[in-house]
Image: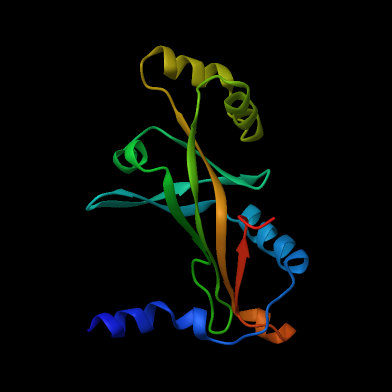
Amino acid sequence: MTTEAYRKAANFWKEKVGKEMPAEQLTPVVEEFLRSSTVCALATGTGDYVRCTPLEYSYHDGKFWIFTEGGEKFIGLEKNKHVSLAVFEKNPSFGALKSVQVMGTAVLIEPMSASYVAHAEYKKIPVAALQKLADQGHPMHLICVAPERMDVLFSDFKKQGYDSRQVLDFTQD
């Protein structure tokens, strides 16, 4: 492929004309989907290194919250707080695709801080068990991803007269 062909493919959705769904209508639908799912694919990277990891998450307070023991995703997180994650239907039928791609910023929450404890309680994880792991030198890390942009692809938006692809941009006020 030529550079121009790559550019054209990359701009496919930007150049496609479609009817936008108002953000006040789109946001609650997307948030319900994100709250009803529990697994995401989190991509981290730095330089030539890229890692995509399936992880359990929670979505609340407009953010993604991920407890993890560790792993190679931290190679990217150490040098680059910009991440991408995807949530999608496992086995959609034709015309029933639902997916959300997120670009955002990851922050590591300090173990046993107020935010850490609050999320443990939200997940119904005993704080004493988390403290014991930390005391043994194996803390559970908590990654919080604040979305900057969500690319939403829900096939059924067409039935409502909107384009199946929608964007939520959190950098605009």
